[in-house]
Length: 66
Image (tube, rainbow, N blue to C red):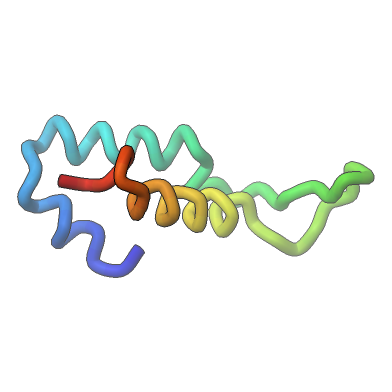
């Protein structure tokens, strides 16, 4: 999410912290690799999948950043 810090500057510090806590809970900062359906490690990092999900959530009307 390019320039997320710029977008979050308009929010109170507590809300910015909550956003990053949520991102962390989703795995956006994880270095673990994703497992495939057979339990084998892939080359995809969990943070890639989690960050993509977070970007989609932020774009929905219910989760949109105000």
